[in-house]
Image (cartoon, rainbow, N blue to C red; front, side, top):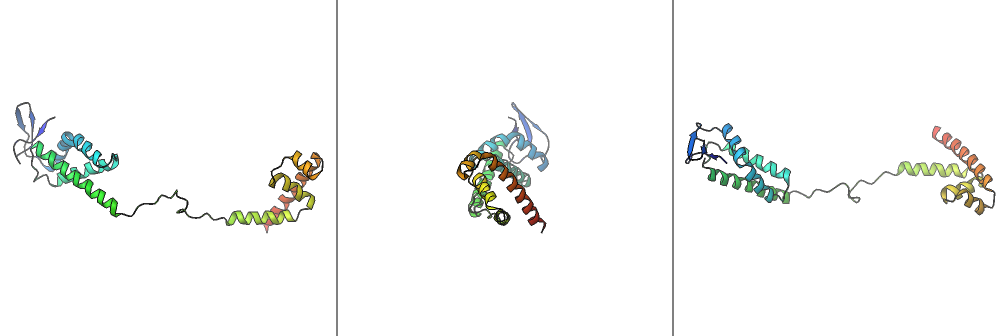
Amino acid sequence: MEALGREGRGPVGYASSATAVDTGPATGDDLVPLLYKDFRATLFAQVLSLTNHDRQWTEDVVQETMIRAWQHSDTLEREPGMLRGWLLTVARRIVIDGWRNRRVRPQEVALEIPENAESTDRTDSSLAALTITRALRELDAKYQSVIYETYLAGNTVRQAAEILGIPEGTVKSRLYTAMRQLRKALGEVTIR
């Protein structure tokens, strides 16, 4: 890894092997890319452990730390060890503030919890049931019994025929006629 700075608060330079190359005074715009290049991986790893491996929060903390480094670029110590320490301290304080804010904020409630979700409006289904009940009452008793045994009781045509004591063919024809009369009655109800 290339080292930043030479001695103290002097200009930022790159150290290669034993010689330092002076690139002139560093501005805030020059400093942040160098910090990202040299310290981002270390900073990210340290912050990731502090945020319980929340990658999004970690990215936010690293970015905020770099913004603060840019804001204080004119007063930052340029020695790599000092920069690393400063960045880690700032990041740790940002995480601590984040934990404090999360404790103070009211707990968010998930909408999937049934007791907290809005109750469903059953007006339409109740109205439909009332309309069908009225239409069924207008049918002849022989048609009502066939619809009850097949649709409401859940019996097969054969079982309904046995229960009612009529042939299967009669059950089928009465069902056909009853459904036609119901459709007609319901059609008239919806037109009104």
